[in-house]
Length: 124
Image 1 (tube, rainbow, N blue to C red):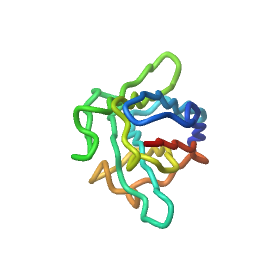
Image 2 (image 1 turned 30 degrees about the horizontal axis):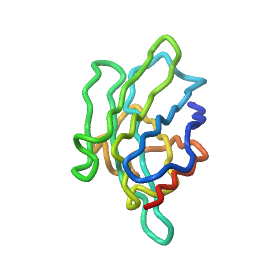
Image 3 (image 1 turned 30 degrees about the vertical axis):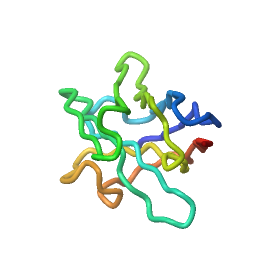
Image 4 (image 1 turned 120 degrees about the vertical axis):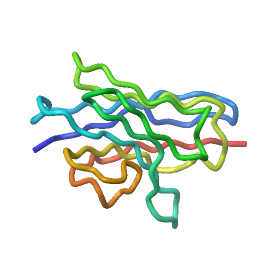
């Protein structure tokens, strides 16, 4: 069992930056995939970025490559999503997710453990 708590969301103007944090508790000993997903209003949840905590491999959606960076701090059991050059289309509820066995790191249905989400709003 893994518990996830996101923080760091907020409102920002286009071109600005935010850093989201996902603090994990519970089973933090085993290596796992940890991902960031987002769900804009009225749309399906989509993968943004993911990281394998064991080796640090990272995965990004094409829409955020070059703008977002996922990283981890193993000592704090925390994964971060640094979001730069934000656009209005990045507006969404952002969720953190985790699981031990994931075939497709950016597919939401691959993950069983989810946080409650943090809202990101980007104004033009």
